Image (cartoon, rainbow, N blue to C red; front, side, top):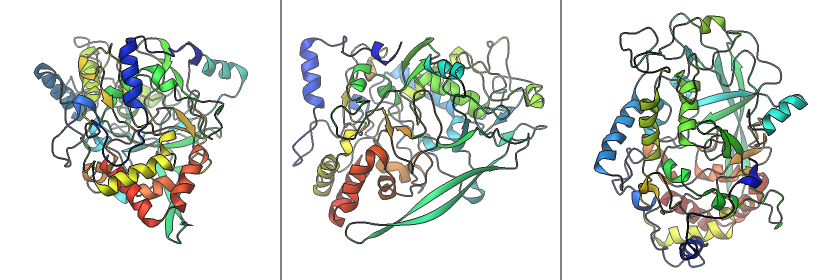
Length: 487
């Protein structure tokens, strides 16, 4: 199935429903007041609880009492520290042998955004993905058939694992250095942008392949994932314009990937390059690669170990025959997936404030909404009615965009080129520092220390919007930032 085979219309809606959806999701032209239901940016599941450090850890408000118990069990697994094998805690062993962290929550800090390395604090919420592009026609055909996203380093696999179980050496250490680059805005104000440079030190198993590229990936927030999963593919593809037919400089593209939960190609939705089609697959890949835990969707008992690391492959795994044939069998994956699908989006704050509304107008007029699509209505035919027919405000089109050389990682991931990134959703972005204990780092590698720097790093298809922001007066820039902080 190629992009042309994906549905281009919504068969889940009647004609009357379709008209309602088109009306309610049309871009607003009235910035004098909030739009209807704008505060409830996660639909009926929006959390109205206090916007404190736990703002990203609340269950969807519209799940049932029984589902709340399932959510809590999933939360316990999300927080669980796995241990190395063999262990007396047989339902918890199987860690690694090579790994980046022991628990999902240790990377997704309070279900929020990770942070780049900070001195001795380590790198466990930002990883280096390792990959090379296709080198011959056969490999190119493999990617075209969606049978591979790219090709791993022959020794170190798909990700650098800095940690290892006792008796084994970790693979190496990420090293990042920054160069400060001043940028002068239209009114003479100066902003310093930090440009990162990445390398790997203390490699334990020999050199990296010369063709291997390094792509730093910050762990993203977990909120609203179940709603994103239920955006109809036709609504996402309606925003795609691969050849920039309308000449606006924006040419979003879908990443068509293999959904290993179904065995079929599908629309990529999750990850920095839209490389995962479902939450379950994204969770399985993270368990296997980040922690070294196998699941039915990713049955790699030794995680990311390669044939060039025989000592790793000789280690014990944590499969318990009485529990299943993987370390995280179906019941475990069901709970983790449900938890990830039902982390609520927090309610907007100060949605009708004068400065917030002025910033929203600027966000529209500068062209930010060309990629950061404000709203969608989810499918009617969802597996869980809690996500059905919900008006949501993610501020993303979930498509790939060329963001220019400044943000390029040079790493192909399926249909995504080394210059392309999926538009990240913006809901909850104003609570980043509150959830992250004061840390607020943005973009795929956390190079931006605040929202202003994040905007100014936009290049490629984001150049026009960035330049309009840079040329605006200080009051307009402040209003736009205040709007983002209200999300």
